[in-house]
Every structure is written in structure tokens, then in C-alpha cells.
Length: 137
Image 1 (cartoon, rainbow, N blue to C red):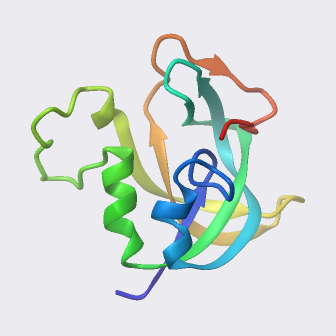
Image 2 (image 1 turned 135 degrees about the horizontal axis):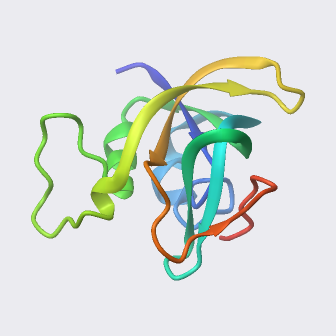
């Protein structure tokens, strides 16, 4: 598998809880970027969730070796269409979808497309982040 492009906005960002394990070994390039969407903090869980919407979500565009995708899907609880949830998966974990989206630089110029993990709607207790930037680990 060749390179993949993934937009990250939470625990996969540089310095984030899961960056070293799931991204750093595969990372070929990292650039600050943004995508269209709405960002929510999930304080009880310690990570954010993005939904589709008219705002901007700040993060990074990663170019990764394609071998990273299986680990990212596992971390995000994403199952490709047609795959069954693993035993113990709950509805919340299955709420993430991986889709392709256009990624933009800081002044709104398109940089290309990338995979991003989003939720259909934020779970109860989510806190909307109007600035589109998550500060957690």
C-alpha cells in the first residue's frame, strides 16, 4: 500500500496521547491544516469529536505510510462497510465514520483530500468548541 493522507484534530496530533503509537512510526509529512466541520470536546472521555458542518476544525494533514490505516481504524472503532463490529463494540464506538474530505491551509486554499474520522452527531455531554481547536492531550 502506498501513502495515505489523514486529517487529525485530537489525540493523534503531534504531542497527543496516541500520536507516538499510531502515527509517528508511519509519518512522512505533517502540515497545519483545517477542514469544514464542527468540533466538540468529550470531557468525560478525554478526546474530541468532529461532525460535518459549516465551521472550521483546526488540525494537521498527515502523509502516512498506508500501513497506518488499520491501526487508525482500530483506534477510532471504525469498521469498513460490510464488516461486523468486534465483540464488545458498542453503538458509541460504531458512531465514527471514515470519509474523504477536502483539506485547506490556514488561509482557506485547498491542499487536496484526506481521510478524516467524524461522528454523525456528538454524544450527550459534548461541549461545542466554536474556535474549532482542541487543546487536550
